[in-house]
Amino acid sequence: MKSKILGLLAVAAFAGAGPAYATFYTFTTNSPGWLMSTDNGASYVPATNGASGNYVPGGVSMPSLWPLGVFENTTVLFKFGFTLDGPITNATLWTAQDDDALVKLNDFTVFNDTNGLAGGSGPFDVASYLSSGSNTLLASVRSTICCGRGFAALLKVETGGLSVPEPGTLALLGLGLAGLGLSRGRKAN
Ligand SMILES: [Ca+2]
Image (cartoon, rainbow, N blue to C red; front, side, top):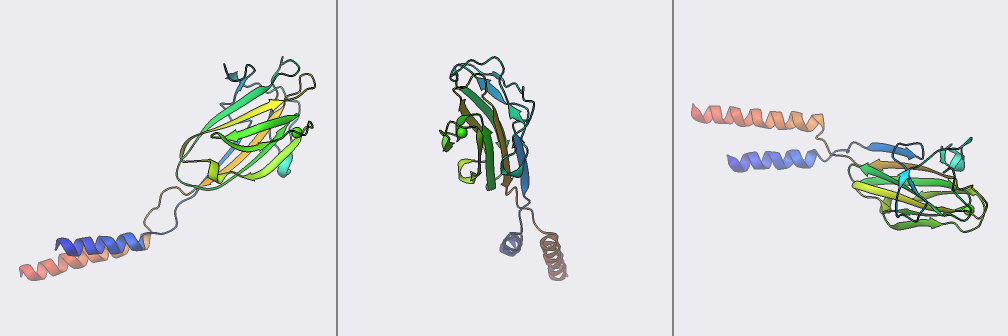
């Protein structure tokens, strides 16, 4: 009897490997939780958004962060922590920076822009840089022109989520268990 039940469960597990439910995440520089540092990471404070306008790279408008009161030649670090649930299926990052930026995801370098001009970067396929659980985006933004250190980011992620048995599988499992009950009843008679 035990082996019959195990066999039924094995069939159910095989048939139940149906489509996983995907989860979609969108993070931008307008998402809560962005931090910034003007002393090379020694200390962080909540990032300020003093922008009067937004960048539009990749055809998508992104709210930008503009630290106020930052002096010439000061590199500003922007840091954003976020949590993902499940294996990463797809992930795309766009950014814009004034003027240049070194952008990392979980210590992987996504790109290092050194052209001295304000502009956008991406789209970048960053799926291999992310993982289920805690993740960190870090952008080191620099400019030689006074006071302009804008940064904007848009990150879209799809995760696989958890696999859930399909209704048809549950119905099969129910029929199998009912059949077991019938055969047991017959033997008892
Ligand atoms: Ca640039």
